[in-house]
Length: 211
Image 1 (cartoon, rainbow, N blue to C red):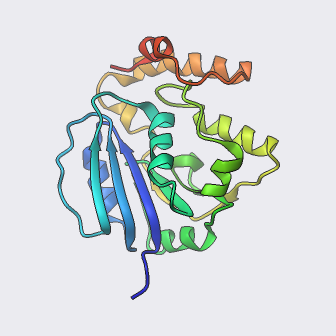
Image 2: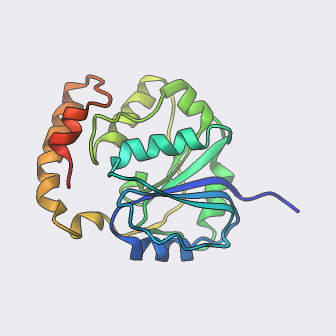
């Protein structure tokens, strides 16, 4: 029997667990290990037969996008490459197979949907050369733009892969996150324009947290 089409898939989620279920229902290939990073700590641990190994990691606090992606990279350090997807995407038939065909240890493949980082695969060789995502961009936005800039400086190219469905900014439409994002977005933009690595800072995270 052949192995899974996607060796590792990690999906961070915050509040839109309804959309997470819709996304998982669109998966049409076998997954080796499927991990949901639950940044609200409230997701029901329902099983799935999509993967050889399925786990829900309930976080006691919201890690934000960059730290959730970095957790994914660390969990899958033995895998040649992994897929990271937002909870509000859906995969058209054949999209995951197309991702798998394009992916590898030394490749970063972004979805052709906008924003491109709503679903992407990243190889271990890319992380080896470029590093993990900048956690100073908290809780969301500019972590992807910063990584693309670092890729360019390392002389690496991004591959544009298949299209996925995406309900953009769905998390901002839940709770009272829109006003909080106005504050954190401006702070993250200023950090990006300053072009200085910042890393994790508990005081910055406290100031920019959405809840």
